Image 1: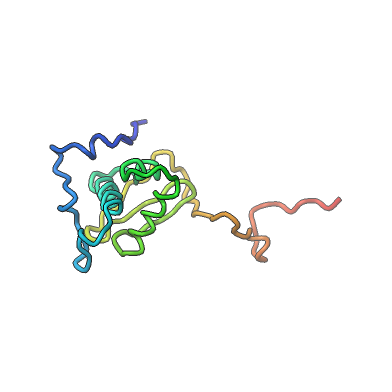
Image 2 (image 1 turned 60 degrees about the vertical axis):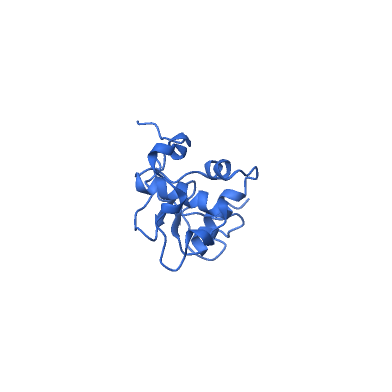
Amino acid sequence: MTPVNTSLEAFWDDDDGWAIDSLPMPPEISADDLAPAERIAYCLINHAAEFGEPCPVNIDIEVAAGFNSTSMGPKLVRKLESRGLIRVSRFQRFRLVEIVATGKQTARHPSMRADRPLVRRGARSAAAMGLPGDRKPYAAR
C-alpha cells in the first residue's frame, strides 16, 4: 500500500511553479474575485486534481488557509462549489472533486472501499419514510 502524500510541503514548494495567479479559472470568474482563503483552498484542490492525488481533507485546507476552526474547510469547499469552480461528489468519509475549468478530478482515497453516499445528521431512515430498508425489523416484546 503506497502512502498518501498529505504534507503541504510539496504544495508550497516555490520550484514547483504553482502560483495562485496561474490557476485554471472559468472565463466568467477571475482569481481576483476570490478571497485569499478561497484561492488557497482552490489551489490545494487543483493541485491534487492535477497530480491525481486524493482531495485534501478539511484539516489540510484549514491549516493552509490559516484557520483554527474545524468548520472552515467544508465552508470553503461549499463556497467554491457555489461559485461554479468545482463539482463535488460527497461520500460518507471522503469526497471526489472535479475542477470545472479543466475537467480533471481528484483521485479516490486509498481507504475508500465503498461508494456510500453522504447521509447528513438528522436524516430520516428509509424505514421512517416508508421505503424498504436493509435492516431486519426489531421483534416486538
